[in-house]
Image (cartoon, rainbow, N blue to C red; front, side, top):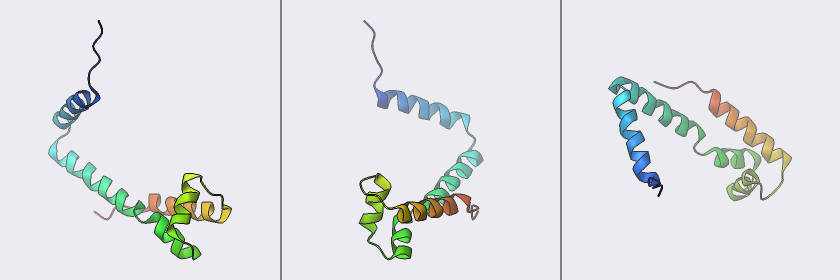
Length: 90
């Protein structure tokens, strides 16, 4: 009988392997990049809502495809691209 490994068990094995493969400076650099990316994207719906004078929940619904608004979609794309293009501050 084939025994499938539990996803969490497998993930922890992969994580342990990755930790061994990456040196401490490389790991720290990656964590800083992740943090910079999250900071750049965090608040995206709020920024778009503020710029367009809309409620954040409406912007969120448009992003999830529950509502349609070409203006909100364009603003989301623009704001996302701007966040993606920002250089890390490290």
